[in-house]
Length: 499
Image (tube, helix red, strand yellow):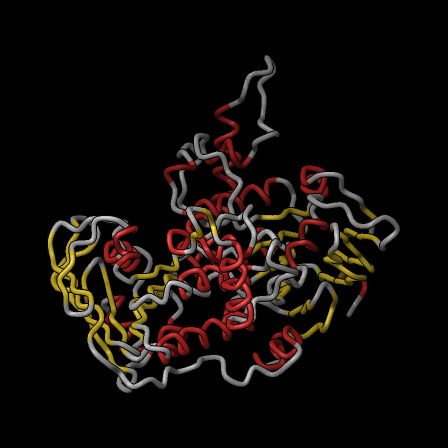
C-alpha cells in the first residue's frame, strides 16, 4: 500500500472495559477516497474501534495511536474528531427533528450577520449548495422530522461534507432502509469517493460488502484477523476469518413431516394497514412472510399476537376459532412472538440473562406465591446449552451481550413456553453471519420439534432459505403464495414490487 495515499492509520490500539478486553493491539489503514469495510461477529470490537477513533472512547493508556492526514491525533470527544475531519454517523441518527435541514447541517457553526443574528438567507444558500453537490432534491428549509429515514441519512452526509470530512464512518447504515433507499445511500457514498473522502463501512450484510467496498478489514475477539481486497475474495474467505471456521450450511432447511393445521387466518383486515389476508400454517411448517418495508407484514403478525385489533376477519388456533384481544391472551393460547426490535420490545436490557429468559413464564414458575429461583436457573441452564448462548453467567445483564446472543435470549424466552405457534419478525436483523446461521438452524429445529413457525424477513435469500412456503405481500395485500420448490428470486420480486 502506497503510504502517501494513507489518510487514516491506527497503530496498536487497545481498549479495556471492566473485565473485558474489547480491543487488543488493533491496526488499520484507510486510503484516500476508498470504502473500507470493517466486519466481524457481534462482540468482535467493530463499534468499540470506531467509537475510539471518533472520540467517544479513549484508548488504553500507552496503547498505540491514531494518525489522521499525517498527524498524530487524540480526541477527547466526538466534536474534536469532527473538527479534525473524522465523522461517525451512528446507526441511530443524531439529527434534531424539530430543526430544519439547513440548521442541522450547520448546527454549532451557523452563519451570523454583523449584528450577531443568524443569517438565514446565507444559511439556506450554503445548505442548498451542498444538497446540489450531492444531487439531492431536499429543501434546506424542510423540517428534518418530516423526512424519511433515508433522506435524513443524506442530511447526515451533507453535514459531514460541511465540516470538511476526510473520513466518514457508517455504522450499519442500511438497517432501516428499503432497497431503493439503500441504492440512494450507495450512490452518495460513491460521490464521497469522487470527492476523495474516505469511508469506513460497518455492516453485517455481506452482499453490501461486495457491492460497495474496495477492501475488507476483519476483526475477531478484538483483534485483526485479515486485510483483504474485496474484488479478490469470496464470501467464504471473509466468514472463515470472522468466525474461525468455514460456514458449511448457511441456511438450514426444515426436514419435519407436516402435521395438523395450527394457525388459520381468513380475510383479516385492518384499515390503512392490510386487507383480506388469508393463510394457514401447519405443525412442523415454516411459512415466510415477505415484502418491502410498509407492506403490512409486521402489522399482520402483531394482529395475530393481539397487539393490534383487526377490523374484520377470523383466526383459528388448532381448529378452534379465537378472538385475541391482548398479547397476554395470545400467550395463554400458545403463541410466542419474537419482535423486530429486540432491544425495545424483546428484552429488559438492565435485567440478567436468566431473568429475561423467564419473563414470559413468570406466572407459571411460582412457589407459594414467590418466584421459584431454582426453576428460573434451570430454565437458564437448559436454554443456554440448547441455543449455545455465549455469556459469562446467569446474572450477566443482557445489555452487555452481543446482538446475536441477545437474540438467542429472546428466542429462549419464547421456546421456554413451548408455544404451538412461534412468530419471528426479522430474527437476524443486526447480527453477524455466524450468528445468523445459528438462528436459521434454531428455526429449522423449532419446526422439527413440532412448532408452527411464521418468519418475517426483509432479506430475500433468508426467506427463501428457511421457508417451506412464502407469502408475498405488497401494500397490505397478499400478492402470491409460493412453495419451496417453485419460488425464485425473480418470481418473488415480481410479487412484491409489481414489476
